[in-house]
Amino acid sequence: MSDVLIKQLPESERPRERLVKYGAKSLSTEDLIAIILKTGTKDFSSKYLATQILKMVKSVSDLKSISLSNLIKINGIGVVKAIEFVAALELGRRVYDDVPLENNLKFNSAEKIYRYFRSELLGLNQEHFFCLYLDQNKRLIDKKLLFKGTLNKSLIHPREIFKWAYLSSAAYIICVHNHPSGNVIPSSEDINVTDALVKIGKLQGIYVIDHVIISRDNYYSFYENNALERS
Image (cartoon, rainbow, N blue to C red):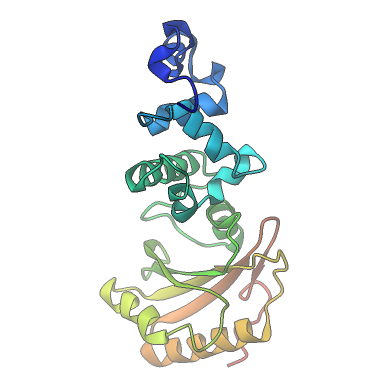
């Protein structure tokens, strides 16, 4: 037996009972994770498994970037527990987003886009490329994560980008991707990809009206920097 099982603790020390009696804010991070995990195994309590998760990160804020594959490596945490834990983290992030992303929310400024995606892309160690699809009034219809990895023409497929535009009857597209390095100045590949998409959009009658590059503390907007006229 690696530690004391929850059922062996006095009721007053069990995480669920303490939450009911004293409220969630009174619990330690370890106890909160134990509750999310629900149960342990015959050899490991949920509290013990919680300590193993916390050993994988330097601080609580790092939990937002923990992966399914790393969670599953912990002895006692299977696929189901890992999925439920990641889902709980994502729900918490959405609850506390500065700017919730909702249908019919008008995207008319790069700063608004930055404020939303800053929390979504925070902590990711590779580039994620999103497209926002807007109607004739520039109101949001849909959001799609289309590509992951370093941005270049070989990875960014215009047919995929414009396929979703047709399916959603979009009139405009805004591209968004992150720079994990923190430097939001567009690379030559960023510029080449943007120029290509703008050209294709003009031919298709579905216009790419901005490409916003996001970092933790800043953003770059092609539109705001008059950088969409290269084509």
